[in-house]
Image (cartoon, rainbow, N blue to C red; front, side, top):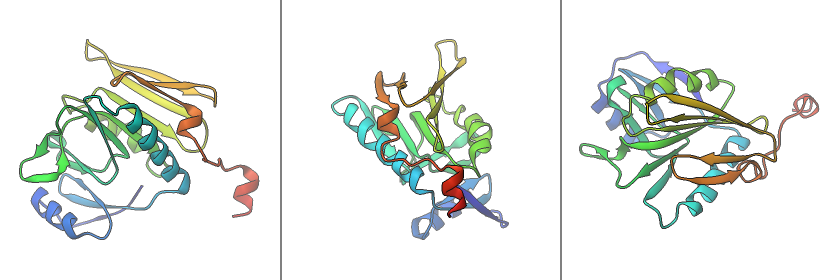
Length: 199
């Protein structure tokens, strides 16, 4: 969730130095620093559920899961961002001299919010696709049982799959594991017209 952009132009190294001591996380967008706002309770619950269950499923395999406190650097587009969930295969590849910034996720999960859903689906996905190792993108809706999945096939084409409804099971192709919607949305309470009126 993004708030505002600081107007000064920053180099990547200036940005990294500021992030070391920043009270809140910021994204880097080719010279601009964009402050990130906090998420909703549903956003946090979904990230927690994914981290716990996927982390357990990947235990003992060559995959490693990270959540939104580790920065991803996208060299081609000069972007630094904090995906909600990243999975790497094998050893993490870091930006030279920066063990808090990785370069090689095979899968990224973003939990959609009202303010960033279009950016996550379009521009951010385009930036992520420039990462050679990247081959699966998962977008989780926090307002209903709905998960969108993009998988890169052997011909480097991106295929789309959608999972809908509480009974569905999401297959994470890059790691060969599955997770039920009820696990992804455990303890998530969807807003209704009635709950919105009482807020």
